[in-house]
Every structure is written in structure tokens, then in C-alpha cells.
Image (cartoon, rainbow, N blue to C red):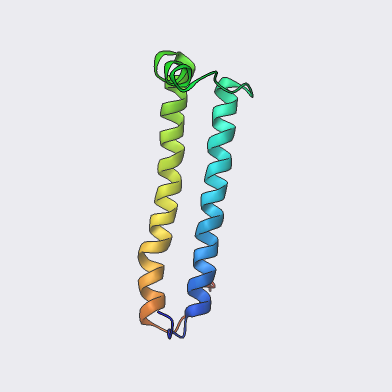
Length: 97
């Protein structure tokens, strides 16, 4: 990989995937705040109680899983084709229409 002519594109794709991860973390935090507010739970047991035994917690699980699935699909479709292609061929990470 170090001697690949597409090393810059591989690094760029890695940076894009890291940005998607950071966006996913921000969305997950916003989702949690949307259901439980800014007040942190008093303890770990209180957190588990809130998530698994309240309607807001069940909604958080369903919505969070759905949103996480969408992020996972985007990352899988980008990386499953792009990384092997970049390792095999001398191509760039730029889209061309």
C-alpha cells in the first residue's frame, strides 16, 4: 500500500470515512439529547433503566439503529469498492460525471 500510486486518494478516502464517523457521533448525540435532554444520567444503572424501560429509550433504540444502519450502508458502499479499486488501479478518489 505504501508504494501504491493511489496513496493520496487512499488517504483522502480515509479522511472522508473519518468525517462520516464524526458526523455519525454528532447525530447520535443529538438523537440522545432529543429524547433525554441535556441532563446526564445519575449512574450507569439509571442510564440502562432510562434506555430499556421507558418509551423514550425504546424510541432512541429504534431511531438510533435506523440512523446507524444508514451510515453503515453509506460507508460500506464507499469502502467495499473504493479501497480495493484504489489498491489495484491508478485512479483518483474524485467523481467524474
